[in-house]
Amino acid sequence: MAISQDKVQELLDLIKKLNEKVEAIKNEKINIELKDDNTPVTKADLLVNDELIKFIKTTQYTKIISEENRQLDFSERTNWEWYWVVDPIDGTKEFIKKGEDYTINIALCHKERPVFSVVSRPSNGDIYYAIKDKGAFKNNKRIYSDGNQKVIKVIASKTHLNSMTENFINNLSKSINFETLNVGSSLKICFISEGLAQIYPRFGTTMEWDTAAADLIIFEAGGEMIGCKSFKALSYNKEDLRNEFFLCYSKSLSKEKKELICQLAKENIV
Image (cartoon, rainbow, N blue to C red):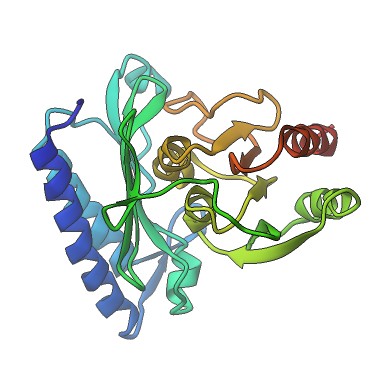
C-alpha cells in the first residue's frame, strides 16, 4: 500500500478530533472573511488546513493541492507522481449557516487518480474512507453502492441547482420514476457510495479538491463517477484544476438506465 496502516489510522484519528473542533467553531459566532475570488473562508477552514498540512509533512509525500493554499503553476506540478488534494471544509456556506451538510476532504493521489482518501461529516461524526483495491468504508464498516432501494433517488445540490441540472432531471423524469434528494457538499457522492441514492448529475463548476476524496470512495464502493464529455474517470493535477461536468451513479442501476442517463447527459451539454 502507498501509505502505511499506521498513517491511515493516524489520519482517521486526526479527522475525528477535527470533526469535534470544527463543530465547536460552528456553534460559536462565525467570523467570515472573503478570499480574492470573493468566496468565504472561516477559522474552521484555516484550522483544518493547517492541521492536515502538519500531518502531510509527517508522511513521505509532501506535495499538496489545497483550496486554502496558493495554487502552484502547472509547470511546478506537472511532474508530480504523488500528492495530496485537500478541501478543509467542503460546503463553507453550509457551515456558515450552521447546517449539517459540510465535509472535510483529503485524498492521496498517484499520478492522475486518488489511491487513499477520507471524507468526514463533522455534524454527526461519520467518517468515510477508501483505499485503492481494498474497498470503501463508513465508520469502519464496508459500504457498497448497490443498496436495496425500491424507489430510485436522484441527488440534487442544496446550493447549486442550475438550469442545466433542472433540464436533465426533467428529461430523466420522462423515462424513469424517481424521488429527488437535496444534499450538500461531497456527501452527495458518499450517499451514492452507500446506496442511499442512485444518480447524481453535476452540471456546474467543481474543483479537484471538491471531488478527489469522494471519487475514490464511490469507485471502491462499486459505483461510477465519470465525466459528461469524456465518459471516463476524472483526472487530477490537471493544468486547469476545474473538473468537467460529471455523473455519479450506483452499480445497482440496470444497463439500460445507465445508458439512458449517459445519453441524457451528453445531450444536456451540447
